[in-house]
Length: 139
Image (cartoon, rainbow, N blue to C red; front, side, top):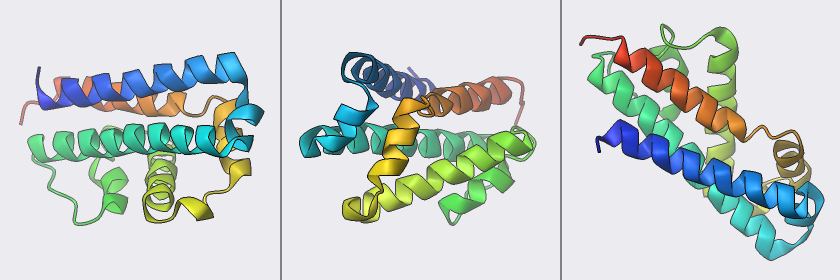
């Protein structure tokens, strides 16, 4: 399995895990219980990091360059992503940065919204879009 396929699988696994837990327990219970909140944050962080890694890998493989900062990825992949998708990727990168550098500063309300509105599905949708685009690129 290549790197892109492995990262896509990792994202899918974490999205499925989140989907199952939201269905089983609901967003409120997942964010109100400290242990469950940390589990959710970890799943979101891993899936976000995998998406960032996938995007960086695809950009490098396509000859678009290697970003000095994650925030540069949406611009590097401008040909692959629509404006809405680029905005979503920027938000995911920002969330990942907050989750990695300070769990205590992550808003429970923000996480509740991500879960209740199933916005974590954006991780898989963006990953699939990037992989689909990469398949059509001949570096």
